[in-house]
Length: 115
Image (cartoon, rainbow, N blue to C red; front, top):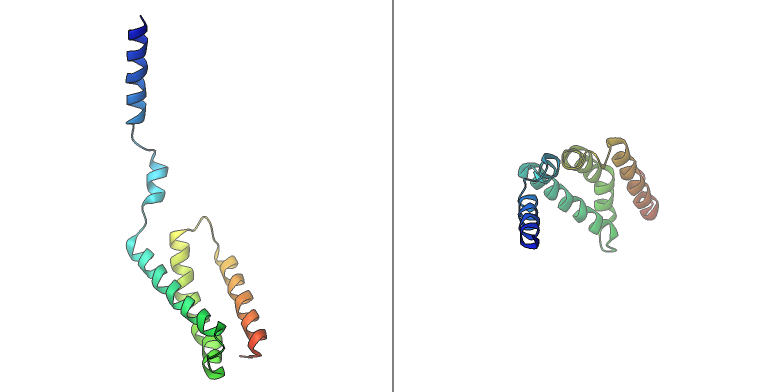
């Protein structure tokens, strides 16, 4: 009797362990490689801009170019689009634009730049 119970228990565990994952879990793991590549490229560009803004050796003219044109353009046209495609449930466009304004305001005040 104990062997039958043990056999049934082991079979039920084996069947339960081999079941297919729910669609929701597998759907969240499917990331479009093109969108991911776009996000990674844009993220690298933005990190380069931030590194230049944090560097004491970056000329003021280049800081103005980054803060007033390059950084906002890259962020709005590529970064937000890619991030919303990757994680729309975690971010909103309004929140991301607010984050951009906070970052721009910080660097403008720090470097005394007006666009």
